[in-house]
Image 1 (cartoon, helix red, strand yellow):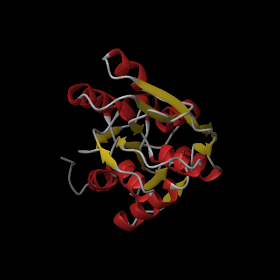
Image 2 (tube, helix red, strand yellow; image 1 turned 30 degrees about the vertical axis):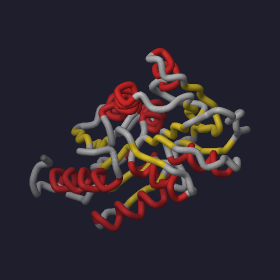
Image 3 (spheres, helix red, strand yellow; image 1 turned 60 degrees about the horizontal axis):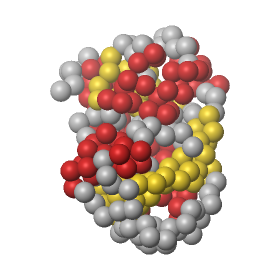
Length: 238
């Protein structure tokens, strides 16, 4: 059986780094086909009185930095987003792996407010609305745009072939976009960073799926390697 190929659909600049890391870890060929284009829009809202920020992705951190945002304490979904915020000079901490976990943790911790959620045009979880309803005053502001892209010719050819495709997905938005435009014939082996992402990708009808133990890049690589072992008959993922 021919070895599987990995399809990476993350936007730039994360997609290229992800493809390189997966190729190195697995020795497989990787096809890149970003399905979203991220562009900073702004402007930043009035930050007077804001005690903390919420970032749900590195894209929000990049946009905030590009718009000249000042150093304010940041609450981030996932270690990668927190690390990006720290690298940008912000005081940041990671809480939870998705919007559900973030909202639950903040309702329990009762952080200082008001809080500002800086997000893209397309967002899930209704974070600001739910926190405010729980008595934690939270506003939101859109500071970047996610423009949908089509699959590249290489990606379409890959999905039309009969070779197994390992499909790591890192966001519900990208998963939903792929499910919207793809009609795969190839056997898909889905690796999702979270259950929300797996749900968004359900219309793709993947033959097998695995959800990473934790929502981070290292766990995703482990899950991809487990999937590869299963596909090549060397074992099954646990």
